[in-house]
Length: 224
Image (spheres, rainbow, N blue to C red):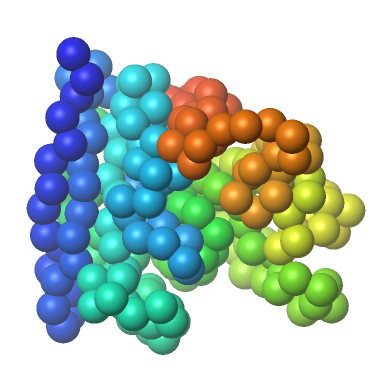
């Protein structure tokens, strides 16, 4: 029987946001996951990823940023995004009594997690589902300097056709991080990990990424 999803609320400095836990009885690790800029925690991609992670013995907690709760399209200011991430991570850490908790997310969600980790959020590791290294067509402005301050293991799941991450530039950035960073390229995948000519819905696409993410999360948690 599939592990049920349990919905809750996370208290922020001003207000609350929704969360969803999937915690299988045989979980060996926990991953807190944030959504991307254009969709909330219940988008099929993220829901499919978290469900598959649960099937692979990794508990997950996903959550919304405030702007999604309010029905807005534009992301909150960075300060609010960071506050939300820190509150979500703290909530997961208080609930999880096992090994270290990891953090990550889709695009914007993963990037904010990395910024928090660079500034001290005690994540055991990071999982990026399409890291937004730069805006499309603006490869001269990389969002990478803070990554060098992160000392925990990082997994980059990245489509090779992702306009937010030139493959050559991404490899150059990760080379500076040494063995802390692992790159798992998805051949032909765009920023949503869709591949031309391959029919798959978003839930299935997200679930497939768990095949690489779950072993990484379990390994990192086991080393804590």
